[in-house]
Length: 279
Image (cartoon, rainbow, N blue to C red; front, side, top):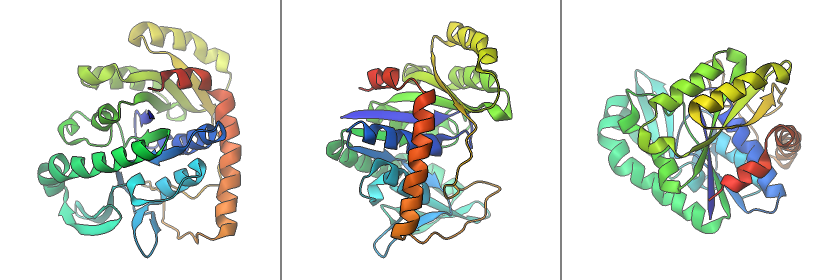
């Protein structure tokens, strides 16, 4: 059983897309792979008569070529405004919760137990579980309530790759700052950095890579170019949910797009080094 986790310096860094690509890359290498996100806040859902999970994990499962089950996303929060969300556990509607109740009475009791149970099921049934974090692991105001980043990485015994969106600027500072704010007991889990959405001459970045490694002792394992994608949109502040018909034709389109994405990501990541990190 091996586990790899993708965390980000911010929301929108590219965690979801990168996990989907890595799922396809390692599936092509012969691993039985499953994606996992312990807690996802999204109104973009994959809905069946039996259960409902985040659409992102369903697309990652297509990348993995694994069965889509509630264990891939055991906690789904659908925001409804005024700091309230409808909480789904293991694909079933649980209850409406205010953020205060969710943080103070749920995550560190029932929430973490639900997440770890699903994680262990996947680890038992697959060769490799690729976990996706949420937001940033360095939200120091919420770290004691965070069951989607470092705590779950530790539970999974996962190597963590930290990705930053360089198109937004400030990536070097974001990576160094994130490492400084992660609790010391978790810092050793981070094994590599990834720069995402880069456009330009890679040679211009390389002196920064050396300085970054001198400061953090952590290597850069890849720089992913800004890629035009034709995949269903993940939830974001600027997104408007659109229903997907999960027909064979649409799944085939997603599958083809994942193949193209995986080829680009694989050619820009040190996959051999990442394989060596796997525990």
